[in-house]
Length: 243
Image 1 (spheres, helix red, strand yellow):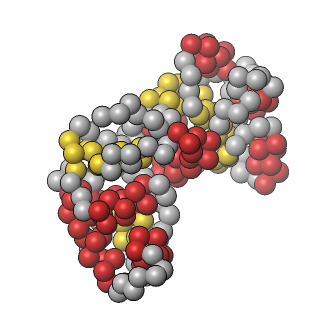
Image 2 (cartoon, one colour):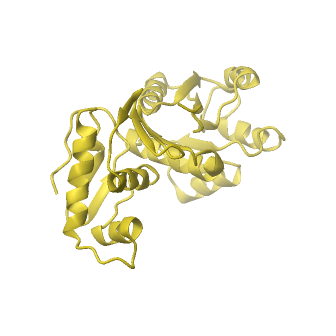
């Protein structure tokens, strides 16, 4: 297969051991390569010999604060555009504004869910490296080679019909977004073609069946009364509801 094009290296700077491990495990489960530091000094050493595509940075750190380091990075030519998500227990609007004005691209208040973290990481990567993600979409070991129009679970090819492929491509490019049946009809079939809404359900079932043997049927979730979404969580058993 072609060389992976999706940015995948994440540097986590968090001094609380439990949170650091939660971040590491949540991101590694999605296929990211993760390195961790508990202070700015260690992070600087990693940054000097490793090139992450995104930083997840705690506001409060021993020694130099994460907020102060964020400002410092934004003054460096090499790192002025490096995507940064700021983590903090401060949840007030003024604190969020202060963090964003200091150079952070996004802000996540503690406590946070691993699902929200992964969704925000993927969204920020798409904004920052959109041109680099045009050849491949990935969720855990499941990935789409858009140029070859193939789907793989690890090294094993997953055989899907053309409509199921388009559905999966749309879902993976928009993790956690809920799509109504009407919107899916517009996105997949087009406004000029009349297709009954129940046709969407038929193809969702086919997509789940195609993913089931590889342990990924559960990522396509039914949202009662709304439609469907692709969840960013790949661990656990198949729990997707039938349409």
